[in-house]
Length: 383
Ligand code: GTP
Ligand code: MN
Ligand code: MN
Image (cartoon, rainbow, N blue to C red; front, side):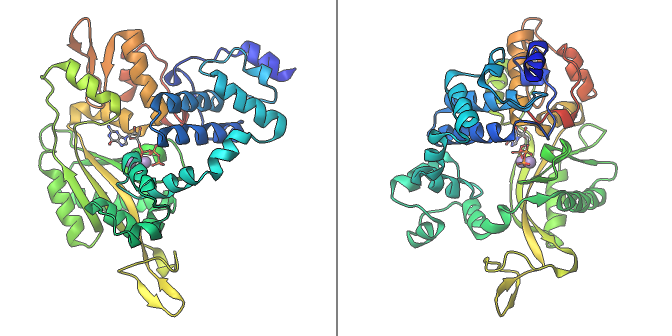
């Protein structure tokens, strides 16, 4: 009865950017099965189906009560028939036969193993599966052709699939801060991504670099990378230059932003993070730089994925908003902007499609104001 009163009182907004979603929520079991289905659909290249499951999970994350009966879903948005059916199965039988089948399927399991390699997406993983490969050992035996990125991904597979702790993220931020301080005094380093949303662990570290005098940031990334490399902090890095042109057709970049990619100068890297006190981790893993012991390989460092992104100061609030996530939150911010406000939002700018003007902002708060949205702090963007 309590749940139903809450349901009646609760008008859950359609867009994730209108909801406050904390990390801890009350429907973990249900969101996990829906996310498994979303992942499976993604592995099949069915992006619309994947999105539908993600949205359903996202709505459940925002509920202030634990769903116990399928009737409680009546007035909720984004819950399609398939999602409701799976939720009902889980509520009534404790598990969904369909989800169990997916989780135990050979294809899902192999796709999961392959896509966990840094640099491997669904396309490559599917191809390997089609060729009959199932495990990392198969991949090595088959001598599959790998990109540089994938080679490093495979080499550091265990480390890169070990959760990055908040303390690791802080340590890496500090190293990058030191590097940036040496290369360009006055420049700043900001931790974005899941850690900014309050997560205690993550799959990588997302860092934004900028300088309050626009233009000063040009050339910074090269110097920072070279400093880090000389100090032995980088196992792998690959950079891309800035390709953003503000005054080309705004329609063009508003389309490209739909994919979540932006045009900032950036570096995808793998850090060699020294561990305090020489803790032994991932015994048996291949560690080219580790110290070999009798039982296998132990080491005093671990590999961590780090994204470095350089932004001109005037675009920083947009970049920060875009790189803080969650993915569901970002996707809906853009969708809301376009459909409800006739504005195009991306990681660089906010553009009014009818008035044909750029709306500037000095903070995330100002971007929310332009969009007539209540400000949602990072900790409540875990949609
Ligand atoms: P974990 O790292 O798994 O803890 O979660 P996370 O939320 O930090 O995810 P991730 O590092 O993948 O991405 C963080 C945010 O940056 C998300 O909102 C993404 O949409 C965004 N992001 C990640 N990669 C890219 C990219 O290549 N281009 C753009 N524009 N955005 C990206
Ligand atoms: Mn991240
Ligand atoms: Mn990232």
